[in-house]
Image 1 (tube, rainbow, N blue to C red):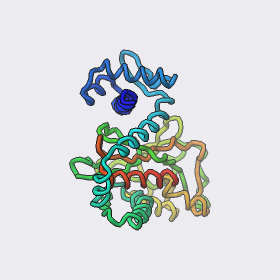
Image 2 (image 1 turned 30 degrees about the horizontal axis):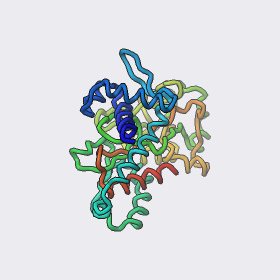
Image 3 (image 1 turned 135 degrees about the horizontal axis):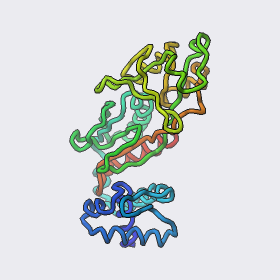
Image 4 (image 1 turned 180 degrees about the vertical axis):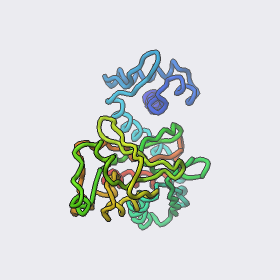
Length: 296
């Protein structure tokens, strides 16, 4: 059992590092031990976990699916062997979270409100920021981010993915015919989201890795909620995350444009920095958020 548990720990680290030498350095073991552990797991499972050659390591599709199961199993083992007195003691206290402004306000906050009613001994500190936070430096327990997370120091789980939709209001489409191709958008009014740090518009992504880099816009904002309101008001076409527009699409207040050219969905990341002993209060919040976001 101990050997299998250790092999799972090595596999999870290797899946984050994508480099066996870096994995060995991180865990304080030899690269040969990393290789042996991965080979042992592959032999037991009868499946390849990584594509590897002399220059690169890539996780397989099977490996990706197994990774979620491995993380869950490791979490359960860690919780099982945590002293029960300590677990009960840790269930009270403060848990600090961060999330993007609009997603945090519209999606995460209702979940946290229900959690607070069920667990009154835990105090939630909820910080909203569109800037990626250093959890350790800012003393934050749990982060939530949409997009591709490259922080290899965190324990990351993805409860769901987020689609993006190109949309317009019916009033705008009464005045302007919808585009039939992506490149026609360059000649139509758009609502753009600006990166406050760089001053540049966020690019729009479409299927087959095609991008539109807006050079001008009918309306510009740095806030997704205002972007949505501008599109609802008929000021232009906009590309927005599903959580912002799906209820408006269902109500007929917005219309999907070029749905066949929609980009691949982005991951919703739930992450924390507690590599080994995660406090019980943090684990309770983390698991609750994961379960609720998975249903969204």
